Image (cartoon, rainbow, N blue to C red; front, side, top):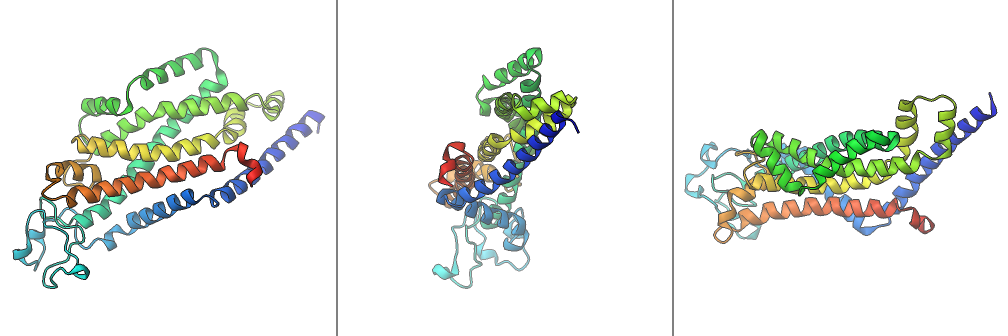
Length: 319
């Protein structure tokens, strides 16, 4: 083995050990931050609800109480307030923890199933945007020149438009629906991830171990995806965590406007949009979906802030 090969091998091993140590330190710092722990706790509860919604929900989320067998008809009222036996609701009246909506459906069941839809929206759109944005940003930062100019100018054009307005325009062209809304949100999110990855690749590609791999005749694919990208993903993790919250908000906004999830799908934004005129006559139908959106976005924001602090190299002395 030549001296150059030995140096490259030692550098690769050092980077691997450093990466493992970094993640251990990161987790240790993360669990020292109360805000991150609160976010993780809320997110854990939401994930549990999403996975067990079919067992936790007392009724079918899209079925009217009129279609439920042996349901007492005298208690079927549109926008019925919450009925909780523990808080004094008559025992003979069927219990509805969040009341009934305008179509006599159990609001609590719809909220539980809406957790599953909202988390799916957040993770799927951000995964799509990260994959596309990472590839574009990596190619742009690594090759530079006209490749960098072409990709970044397209990203600049997308960033010139407010993300929600651009998403509305895309959904208007494609047609309303949850799938098209997810695609639109994913497209408008790509530039943020592309720019983050490009900046990371620009700083990592000049490292000694990359130069050693290049001197040994490593291919561009090997250098970029096996040497540079694994060591340039730290800011992408933080951006992705915060991006999930933004994606959930954007999807709720599109559904509120009638461009996202379509009835009778139990999506929080569409539930708000359907009952927005009942804010004074049936406030529970607006309050509960709004609280659900707020808690979900808060959980990801707290976790994202905690990750950003934990991954900040300037805080290394704290650990």
